[in-house]
Length: 99
Image (cartoon, rainbow, N blue to C red; front, side, top):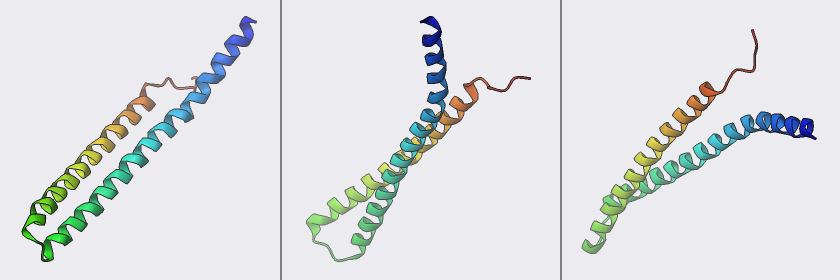
């Protein structure tokens, strides 16, 4: 019975390595899509500033432009943090090769 439990624990540790990589890839994909949507929104707001707007809409468009640029900057910083954690997690894992 103890042997079966030990084998299961070892097989779970082997299965977590690809899971960790997929987890980081999913987070990078989500943050990347958020950044792309923020850039599209910033471009749209920038385009709106070149058209004739009523005075009441000018502040709204400017605020949306600044907000979408801020979201893009946060998404960029988040992707750098995720990549750094991914690299550190790869370096902290013991190598399976024996010399």
